Image (cartoon, rainbow, N blue to C red; front, top):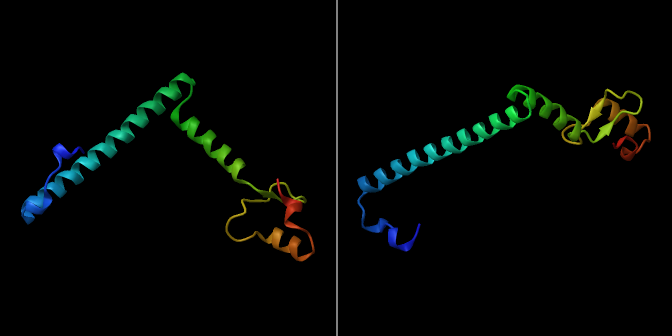
Length: 107
């Protein structure tokens, strides 16, 4: 906001300040909604350009994100993985207790 449009809040009474606050909250909600709507329209266009549905794109994204986030894999069972976040899985705890190094399982 430029200085020419600045409101001198000190000179307003409580009711006027509340009205400004309520109007600001409504405007914030409206702008947030518009931002999400614009993003959705762009997403629809990407889906159309890709000859896919939004659901197909989201499902593919979930699979890619899951693959990308895996940091460790059990060398004895390729289905067992760990992202490196949260509790260590039992297979990894047991392997580390048996003397293996964490780096042995890094992808």
